[in-house]
Image (tube, rainbow, N blue to C red; front, side, top):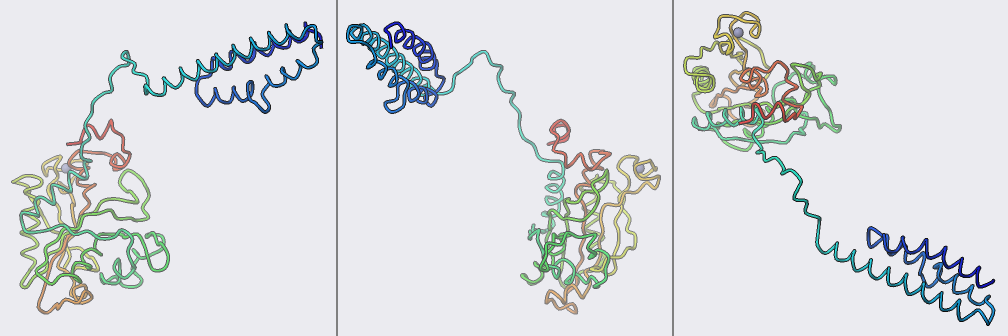
Length: 343
Ligand SMILES: [Zn+2]
């Protein structure tokens, strides 16, 4: 190798190595460049050093001098860049004072949570406490203990999410009533709010997972009068003092007699509108006297104790209160909508 060839080779090497070493954007990138260009084992500088051997004795001092200059320049460039990058890391993220400030906003309760909290508050004054239970239930707690006949349509595979081995996602919060009856002796006054699951289509008025809230009162001498008086009081507290209510006969496996409770339409005041289909009434809950078979299956003497229960959908009540046309608004988690109704 001639001296000119050697000088050209070192020039090419330097032109590639210097920008890589001095322009590295991170310590990792810099270390990779150091290994590639200056590394003791396979760095390109090592190859240049080996080329020195091929230079004639007369040219060796010039070539050696050139080699040492380049090595010193690259090493200095590497060391300076390493020091600069280390300082950057120590000073933390860059502070850009020209960035606009982040908008301040406060979280709020979901409208369904607001409704549940209000209902619980009203019943708490009447001596009711909140009871909770598992969302994954056994068939016995969800259906069997509640007097469902074995061929009841609600138990159909198409209507219930079965998890296998006798477990399913609860279709109502009624299992909490059974669990409470098993665990506590009367008098019992509980509210059971929670999420329930059904194989319903997700459309404007149905959702496969939704909130339910049930109530249960069991004691000696409880009659249908207590049911009507308590639920009417609740309706007047929740919807307004003059709110009219009515009870219509209905059927549930776990209550006898059973009744749907309506309140006068909140939108038209009972005159009739499209929301209430011209009837002037809105159905807000199912209710009834607890079936003696339900009390007995929980080990409670149905000759001595009686009780009443009700169940309602806080989501549907929220729809009426906030005049929502589509129940999916409650599940979309769209902040633009929720911020309008959050309290
Ligand atoms: Zn109406």
